[in-house]
Length: 74
Image (cartoon, rainbow, N blue to C red; front, side):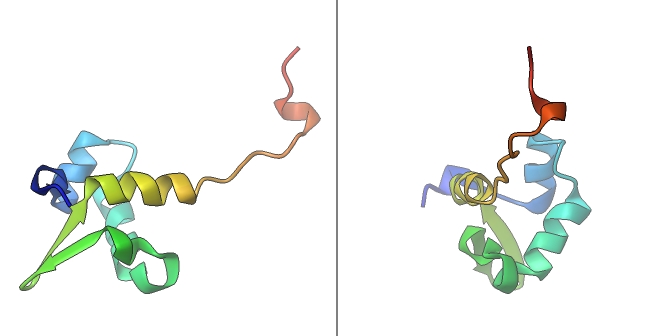
């Protein structure tokens, strides 16, 4: 883990506006079920996110769009 990759929820959201703070907090609350716990660094009562682990988690949770006429390009 690289210490420069450790971010707060607010910092991660600010760096990536597509991910809102409530969205990230929901992932944290459900971390045991969704595997997000692999991204978390807990120190005392604080919760931080390892950005490199977050990027890997996000990549692993991508959903592929199946072939469909509405998504095909000519």
